[in-house]
Length: 135
Length: 135
Image (tube, rainbow over all chains, first blue to last red; front, side, top):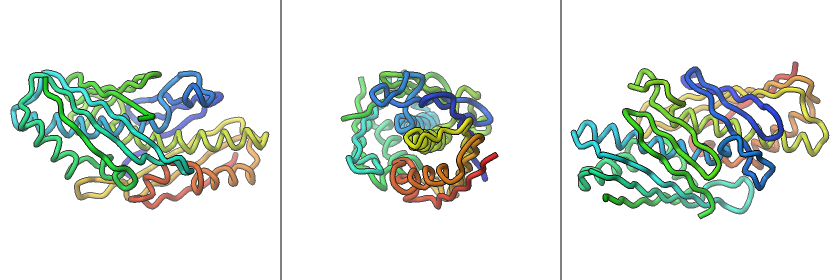
């Protein structure tokens, strides 16, 4: 198949997952017996969502010759209380400096509505909303 | 909300996402202009899936007093060709040594059918299959 990762269990809830390019550490949340050795698996999924839409936005703005000076994306999520616990609500806050607001809005909408596969997958269970802040 | 991560764009397609506990690096795949500085966002989601089910399995086997000597999980995925590109097929290969096969099967089934929220989310678009190998 076209994508592969290999998880290795180390000790307690510390695990790592390696692709051909890079390794990432994971651990349970500290209040679930974790030792703080990495993000939790669900945090990693949320980080992947941020990276997916972030790369879309940067790639689109680059083509528009409108790269911002800086870009941050804050992502917050709530989960269902019943098992399996899935994301029920996700809010994305795109925060840019040195940006053309109109072009940034266009890029974010293209990512959220057409390109970002992680958003498309998580939108099957979560209501995803976003806001854009240009300083 | 109950979970939060903050993405920061560094340069080109290199980005990182930080929670209160840990930071993870991301980069585009080398054939998409990446510099190998981290897993791609979708690889990170796949790694999160592996960690989610891996932690379920270890937690369940611990309660059964049947922890294996080692556990690895290989995860492979295919994506759709149309945008937004979502996972269409995911195969999980649980590979354990020093394990009670019957209890491991029970733990994997509990994770895949009841507990793993990442599996439940990705199963909305992908057919997820698994196999278990005990050495």
